[in-house]
Image (tube, rainbow, N blue to C red; front, side):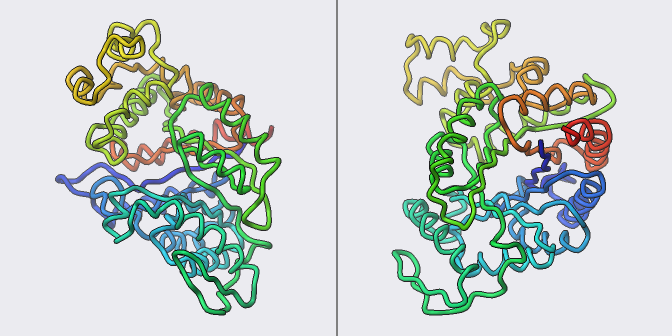
Length: 384
């Protein structure tokens, strides 16, 4: 089992704003500690224009610093939004960080969201075909001394794209997604899955099994098949079991608040989350009668009807024990965290993407969580 720390680059606000300098410095401090404790990966997103949600617009630059300050931990691009970049520039940047880090880069890819795409003058309707074209091109740039391309979105005359990656043949390649169709695309193209939903392990297990079977017949876009599945879980480890679980639950509910990038304007999002978390438990049926009635067909399914009947933050009723017992969060004291990890391990995951740095949790508490998990939980699974 491998353990990665996932980063949106968030911190509690100071006077209503992000202290960007402090956040950058604290993020790097957390990475250095994770490296010393034996975590396997750090993963850094790419986001633009998301105000207080994420300042990670240039992950390659942050990783340039991390490559010199860490020794063993792998540097995962989680992910490069391919439609927003020229493929040559992507190939160059990934290879450069791979050289700087002595071959510790993993190359995650994705299409991004419409809000960011439009801000960068990318037509969201073209994002799928742009991703498809770019993912085919980049491994060829790393392999060939002279690369040329004539395609739908890009035409490149014969050029030698340098530097080449340090890793031979190239960094492991991944695709981020939250839908079954994306998992199938990843398997077909020989890409690892960065499963960025917060689905309960029991809900994800069938998709993982299907992916593992499908990828055996991959037609890989790169020179090697990456058959790993990594799954996201908001995580917090502390000495006090109840306090640590409450910290993770509060972070989870804030992360999916009604004004967040993943939820704003998405009428179905809370219903989808509840399903991904294993459905409404018996002891919460009274609080979630709107879900049950809609499933039975006794509530109108129009968006207007839902918005008048659904709590705007319709996951508030989920309690710490339900979320912890289902593995939606990995939280609590070290023993509880171990139980959470086992659920993810038993579902067939190869790596857990632990989201510990969140804007409801101060830096000092994140450091303590990384340290306690790294000293008390990690060793048990690293010896497996």
